[in-house]
Image (cartoon, rainbow, N blue to C red; front, side, top):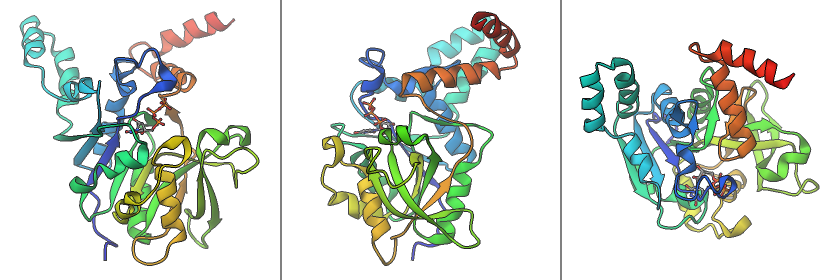
Length: 296
Ligand code: UTP
C-alpha cells in the first residue's frame, strides 16, 4: 500500500524542444532563459527544495548541458570572485550549486512529457513523487506543492494542479472535468483531455506544470500510445488513472489561484520577468517609475 509513504523525490522534465521560443532556444535550453538574474529552472529547483524534496532528478536531452553546468560548481569563476573579494556574487553562484545533489537522466528523443516522466521510473521506484515542469514558475509565496503532497497522502492517488483560464484559451492546455468532494478543498478529476478545441472542452480548468503522482503512472505510461501531436502525453496516462479502479488509481485536482508563468511562452515569460523584477528591492521601485513613464 503506497498511501502514507512520504514524498522525497522531484522529477523535473527539461528535455522539450522549446519551439515556441525559437530562435532563442535553438542552441540554449528554454529553462536557462533568465528571469531577472537567475535561469527559470533555478526557481523550479528552489521550489522543490522548499517543499522538502531533497532527491531531484532532471530529465534533460541534447543541447541541455548548460543545465548541468549551472547547478555544478565552477571553481575557476569562484577563485576569480574570491580574488576580487566579490563576496556577493560568490554567494549568488553558490546558491545554485548548493541546492543539493541533482541527478540527471537523458531522454534520447523528445517524445513528449509522458515519455519524459517515464524516463524517471528507475530512479523513482515505487514511491509517490512530484513532477515540476522546468519552464513553469509558481509564485514563491505560494505553497501549492506542499498542499498537493498533502492531498496525495490523504487520497493515495495522483494529484494535478489546475487554474481557471479564459474558455477561449483552453485549447493550449490539458483540460479537466471535475466534481466537488464534500468537505474538501480539492476536487475529483473525472476525466482529462489534452488541448481540446473550445467546443470539446469539458471545463475551463487547465492543467499546469505541477503534479504529485502515484508510481502506478509508470505502468500506464509504458502502454500509452502517442496522442496529441504524436507525443506520449502525461495527460492521457492520467486520464487512464482517473478512469481506473484499485490501488494507485484516482486523480485529484488542487485549483490554484496564485500567480504562475509559463516561461516557454514569450508573453508569459515577459510578464514573469517584469513582475519579478518590479518586486526586487535593489531596483524594483526605480523600474516601476520607469514603466509608468514608458507606458504614458
Ligand atoms: P512543453 O510542451 O512546454 O515543452 O512541455 P516543449 O515541447 O519544449 O515546448 P514547445 O511547445 O516546443 O515550445 C512541458 C515540459 O515538458 C518538458 C519540457 O522541457 C517542459 O519542461 N518535455 C516536453 C520534456 O522533457 N520532454 C518532451 O519530450 C516534451
